[in-house]
Amino acid sequence: MNQTIIDLRSDTVTKPTPGMMQAIMSAQVGDDVYKEDPTVNALEERLAAMFGKSHALFFPTGSMANQTAIKLHTQPGEQLICDHYAHVYNYEGGGVSFNSGVSCKLIEGTRGMLTAEQVEGAINPPDFYHSPLTSLVCLENTTNKGGGACYDLDEVERIKAVCHKHDLGLHLDGARLFNAIVAKNEDPKRYGELFNTISICLSKGLGTPLGTVLVGNEHLMKNAIRVRKVLGGGMRQVGFMAAAALYALDHHVERLAEDHQRARELAQVLAQQEYVKSVEPVETNIIIFKLHPDVEEEAFMQSLEDQQIRISNMGGGKLRIVTHLDYTARMHERMQEVLKNTFSLIN
Image 1 (tube, rainbow, N blue to C red):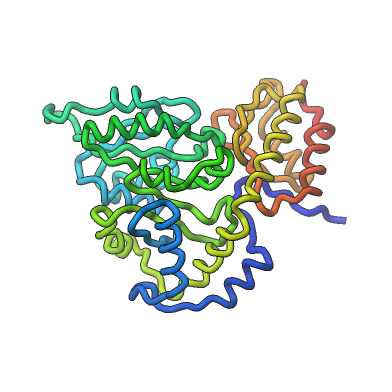
Image 2: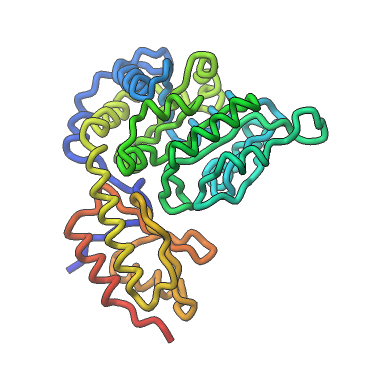
């Protein structure tokens, strides 16, 4: 009998729950290009209020929302500061340069997170015309390549002070922002106070089929809909997806703690196995680990695949597991047993 596939490559692989499907099917919709979709408007208003911002705009993808934010903050020839692990640099197809004509100054932070001192040291002198003008700092919370690490908001406050001192924008790639909020028991409004713009992804831990909302205040967001149009992001009756997001905000936020607990338990099992060299600290729903040098990654990955288990190879020896809404208690039991008992790959 075929076993159920356990897909832990990402939290983007989830399917809508029955309750979410009902919300999708019963949504009131209109043409969002005309801003006449009542469900989209309700979602935008809810998230703007939740984060203490005046404006919000719904996007089909997180990358498009981030790229729009960068365009709103910068002019061609300028430079943004980000960690060398940052999604905006590594995983958005070179959009920073392609869409905005902006370069990235990369900083090697800790698990994808920067400090205020690092940011200050990376700012180009504004009167030195040979260098790109620094105009924006981009942070990511939680960090993807950093293994789901969460920023300390006190450190973000210090980064904000540096940005204010040097007249820089501060954007947050909130790809897994609700994971951080739940893990650290934070108030979303504090994020709104610290960041000029925030992209809030809804299709990862919250389990919607698509969607990210960009929030900010009017002076920045007034041109967001124009940039979205230029990038091809105008959508029509997208209220069906906004309804999924509203449902997720009501039902899928607090349960993220379950994903975090299961991730910690998997990390504990991995740390006890001889075939594992190291496991990075786990704060949320991402586990990054490295194999013992005697274990071939390809053989390890194939052994998992043979048992209907899928994880990600991030390159550089890093393997990634991501827990999520569709990863059940029964799957979790089986996964732990597989990790404990399956492998005899060390030569």
